[in-house]
Length: 431
Image (cartoon, rainbow, N blue to C red):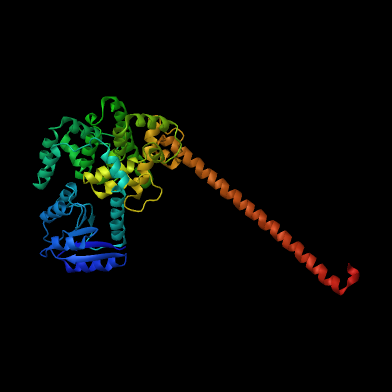
């Protein structure tokens, strides 16, 4: 069955470009203009997704209307810049999942299909049943509404800082995050910290703050919640270190705090059954599988990635965040945009557990652990590795040379036998 997408745009060139590109990828695209009665079109068509072109005069009110009247249909944007203040605000408020360029490419259709796949995975009946069994879900703090309003009014960072200071614990979490090894910035100024974080990462920190709030679990579960929080912070720090080591660059600012919330689904497992979670951590100590979600399935019949994906979709976080969280234990990553971050986060996740005394028998490839070595020792290791590779190459060359010599001797012997055999046929007495 083909995917159906509705594009709302005043720009004929953009419509034609998207029609041409998406038709090649088994996606049916329908286009209408802003002044048409899009509500009726949507009700009749029931598209899988709606793309709204923000390069022209379209207003944010259309997105609000679509969110109110069609909350289950995924909303995406077209913009000249994903960093534009208006676009950042839209994504921050959850009015759209992702942003495309005016000129689509092969990755445009991949992203659309990936977003729909994610929606289907986290909207499955087993996830909904698990969620329904929880007494409550973590919720964003009340000041979150004030933050979104301040963004709408284009307030500067000093105003944002004043709003956050109303929640001292959240302000402390933000400073702790920015001063961590992940960002490697030393500041006691909340306003400076917010400037480094950016809006998307700020939302991640708010999510982390809400999810690790002690009030969401019974008193007996608080020590285990603290273990999960320690694991979260270690995972974030390690992800940055591994990512920079592997790819020789820093994680994009908008994605920099995703590892901080990547395993929030574990908090929901703890909320669901305290005794099972105690058993879970006990088994996790000596668990040897790299993908420890197999243990999730065994004990809870659910994975923390699916639960995290559901929670982030409910909180209307950007699809990039949901994608990383949902797929960070999978061997094959479909979305090229998230592949590198997931690779670093997956290894960091395991190493963080090891640091806390769990997953003792899980093997982690040295390409992920080398970045933690002393620089001098690492240089020695690389020099020795290069030496070993040279010696191996030299040994292989000697072997080839020897084999070639042996081969030439064999050829000479065969030629000698042939000659002898030839003359023997003419002069039998030579035998």
